Length: 321
Image (tube, rainbow, N blue to C red; front, side):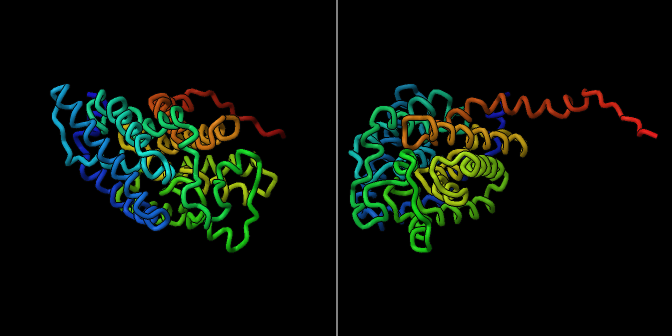
């Protein structure tokens, strides 16, 4: 029996994704505050597309459809929150359908999927609808930087001078960007909730954020000090959202604490590398998928470390008289 199958027997999907959906309530509420009913429309279409696609394909494949596991609701909501509010409604619909039929159903469910379905769906939409995915012009006139997102500024090598007002705007999500992922303060609250409900998953989050912080401080994309670089990189796009909701996905998560930290760190390095040399403004979902693919390798290598260390011959040097 595989590790994923063992996990599926010990974890209830409804409880797992129920916790995620509880954490998503605040980002959804904030997106409605910023963008009104348009945000609700994007979320509703995305969630409905995920649910219906699972229902239809499960019937076609003669598999049981379980709405109560809540995974489809989470997939649709997560994909929607990573998109701009003004996006055409067919884009989140296509992304959610792709996530369900390619990254969930073929593997027997979300708890068996080797890749995070929400990350797969958003990555697919990024490739197919690049112009819309990074168009943040909808209702952004009153936001810091107007239509320009932090991600686009960093891509161009531009920075924002951090004073008290600017820093609060950035941390509260009052900048143009994905409609539900930009508020660092909310992501921090979600981490606190995760610490009570799934504290073991935080090792992956810690590795992911630590790698991003270290990379941003040592290799800044902008002409600014390390602190400014770190704050802007963490606040741009969906990085913190992915650290909380995607890199902690149960199916792809390794079992050991150290392995989870390394797994998260690998994802963080991929994210920052692709932000630096890639062509997309936001690359975090691609990074999560790459980390998913490397997860078995990381698990195997870390497990072999103790025996490898023991096999290394150490010679005690005699002290010179």
